[in-house]
Length: 529
Image 1 (cartoon, rainbow, N blue to C red):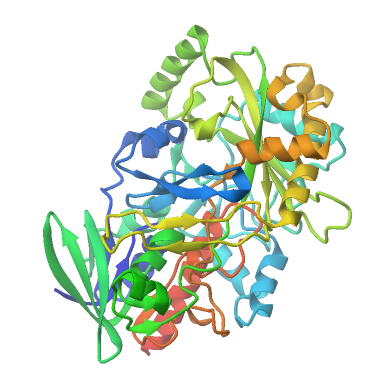
Image 2 (image 1 turned 135 degrees about the vertical axis):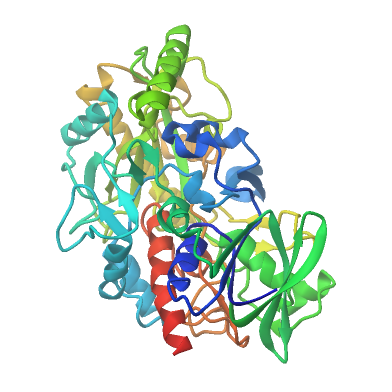
């Protein structure tokens, strides 16, 4: 089969690209997704996120290699594996990051990616139900809304943050990011609004767009040095798809570099060790992996307004299931991480370097370990980590997980900022608006000096699911793509997803990935003229 464009991966970026490129009826577009269609009710019910770690059919439970900075522990790295990718399995928080993040991208040798350049694409993507100003769009495909029924404890968190000295911020995506507030979410009418819902579902009937699920890309084939074919496995059969114009890899920070390396595009020594013939020696493929390290403070609070494991909690859950099924309202419209904030770990920081996510339940082990009783949790996340790691092949089998090594907390500055962030987060938990209802669990409340906090963080920290950087853009020898997102030395091939981000944005990465794909679609269209 032959198409003008083949997009590999139907995650947030892939859905945007498929929709935007197929707007031109004269071109044909194939969108390939290894996972199934996004039909599970757990995807569309916002609170279904709580079950995602248990549903491997749509959430791929990847793991890291043992982490030196986490005392040898193996980290959990779930990735969405369905139409919409991780936007179909994430916590739906809409955050763009800081203006300075994108100016830094441009300063690193990527013209056209400064804040003034990307803001129009954030606005183009967005339909904001509440905000209409110079910062926000109201005619885009991606619906951004207020929480329909925010938990009373989320409001108490915001009050506690103000009591602890932070300003209330009603818009984390406006003029400034710092402060505390309720998050806006990618919801619509009480349902999750993933990138697939926003960009793909309305256009599935286009005759020039073919969406293929259950298709695993094995490798990209070059013809005369130009990327022209994708070899895929579907239903046990292998076949090749041909691209007349471009192949666009949108597999994410783990799978995009893995596909390039299986195709002979990557660090020559590693490819040789894996028995892969080198087609183009690109030493930066799989380098620069970084992610937001995160640790969770848990508080016991015997209040059944919070989610929890108890007879009354089960009864409330059953009531919420009925209400959501009948009206798309009520308890199950939560995204759990309903509120949060941004602040500096110390006055010396030029901008906020800590993000908080307030969760209306006791979150233990990514939600995979049930915890009896009720309570709330407070994530403390480092926004600009300096630790860097790698992605490497474990096998040339396309179904094998790659070797993921973020090297969490191996840079001394990262731990110092995490400790300071935990100390400040505790001030919010100790403020009257929250301390009147619950107390920090003994596991962390008894820790006071830096050595104790450092040990506890290493024992408990992990990802908050924002890996980036493994095919980063730039013009230096370790850059994988240029500022047009074209793979260096390989005509006909681009990478468009979070792997091209040279530095992680200061916040949740879904909105930046969608923005990036919106801009990439325009770059691809312009190149075809």
